Length: 54
Image (cartoon, rainbow, N blue to C red; front, side):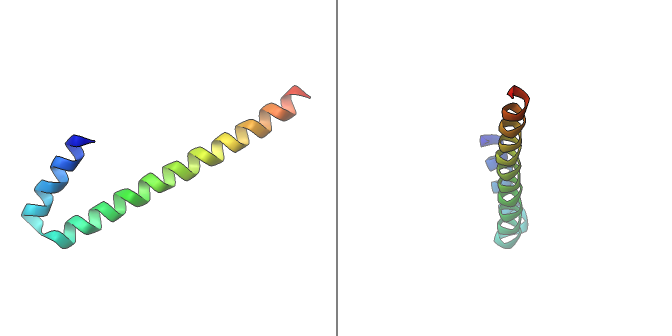
Protein backbone atom coordinates (compact mmCIF):
# COMPACT_ATOMS: atom_id res chain seq x y z
CA UNK A 1 0.00 0.00 0.00
CA UNK A 2 2.90 2.35 0.69
CA UNK A 3 4.10 1.90 -2.88
CA UNK A 4 0.69 2.88 -4.22
CA UNK A 5 0.66 5.98 -2.03
CA UNK A 6 4.10 7.00 -3.30
CA UNK A 7 2.96 6.63 -6.90
CA UNK A 8 -0.22 8.61 -6.24
CA UNK A 9 1.76 11.42 -4.65
CA UNK A 10 4.01 11.49 -7.72
CA UNK A 11 0.91 11.79 -9.94
CA UNK A 12 -0.36 14.56 -7.66
CA UNK A 13 2.82 16.55 -8.20
CA UNK A 14 2.98 15.98 -11.96
CA UNK A 15 -0.66 16.25 -13.01
CA UNK A 16 -2.26 18.29 -10.24
CA UNK A 17 -4.64 17.84 -7.38
CA UNK A 18 -7.78 17.26 -9.46
CA UNK A 19 -6.26 14.25 -11.21
CA UNK A 20 -5.10 12.90 -7.86
CA UNK A 21 -8.57 13.27 -6.37
CA UNK A 22 -10.19 11.52 -9.33
CA UNK A 23 -7.77 8.61 -9.13
CA UNK A 24 -8.21 8.18 -5.37
CA UNK A 25 -12.00 8.24 -5.75
CA UNK A 26 -11.77 5.57 -8.45
CA UNK A 27 -9.51 3.38 -6.33
CA UNK A 28 -11.82 3.79 -3.34
CA UNK A 29 -14.78 2.69 -5.47
CA UNK A 30 -12.87 -0.40 -6.57
CA UNK A 31 -12.04 -1.31 -2.97
CA UNK A 32 -15.69 -0.88 -1.99
CA UNK A 33 -16.81 -3.13 -4.85
CA UNK A 34 -14.31 -5.78 -3.80
CA UNK A 35 -15.54 -5.56 -0.20
CA UNK A 36 -19.17 -5.87 -1.30
CA UNK A 37 -18.43 -8.84 -3.52
CA UNK A 38 -16.46 -10.56 -0.76
CA UNK A 39 -19.35 -10.12 1.67
CA UNK A 40 -21.81 -11.42 -0.91
CA UNK A 41 -19.60 -14.42 -1.68
CA UNK A 42 -19.35 -15.28 2.01
CA UNK A 43 -23.14 -15.11 2.41
CA UNK A 44 -23.68 -17.42 -0.56
CA UNK A 45 -21.01 -19.77 0.72
CA UNK A 46 -22.77 -20.02 4.10
CA UNK A 47 -26.10 -20.68 2.39
CA UNK A 48 -24.54 -23.38 0.24
CA UNK A 49 -22.88 -25.05 3.22
CA UNK A 50 -26.13 -24.94 5.19
CA UNK A 51 -28.05 -26.61 2.36
CA UNK A 52 -25.28 -29.08 1.69
CA UNK A 53 -25.28 -30.29 5.30
CA UNK A 54 -29.02 -31.10 5.24
